Picture 1 (cartoon, rainbow, N blue to C red):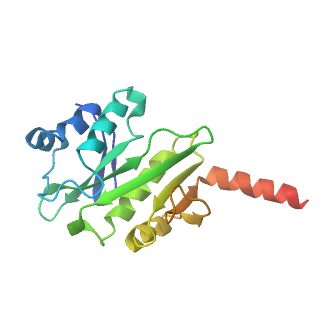
Picture 2 (picture 1 turned 90 degrees about the vertical axis):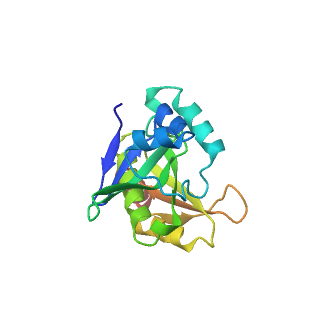
Picture 3 (picture 1 turned 180 degrees about the horizontal axis):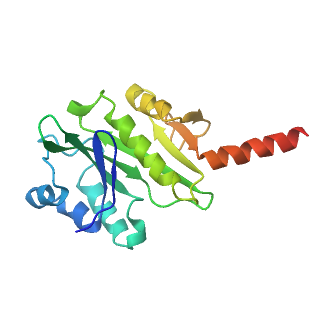
Length: 191
């Protein structure tokens, strides 16, 4: 099976496919397809059978959905010559009409606080911005999730007004081309 993947310094991000996401329900098959060791703590927070089923269904709508839902984070542990599944992230579907996508991510606790989430989010943002239709990436998190806020800040997100639910913080990262457009608009207003 052919996958879309992104390789960073320490990670391989593998885009979910209907077959790959559905295989999570059968751990032995999933291990073979993802080609990585699956820690006993899998799945990470926020990823459960309900989200797996929903994601698989969205991916079945067409091959153009691949990359816009989930990506598996595989640690390339060169010291042990091992691949380990450490997290998952991705987008909440394709872009809105104004070119926005929303990102989310979760890393198993034993792999947190060493920069893997920051590295994965950076790769996902770069992948999204490689599509000319994407103007910006939105993220939402809770104020007590300081580590999540730091991941966003390290990746150039800024806190913006607005929230989907009370108490949820909203962040935005614009594509460079969108920033340039905003700058031109601001200059034109000043003239």
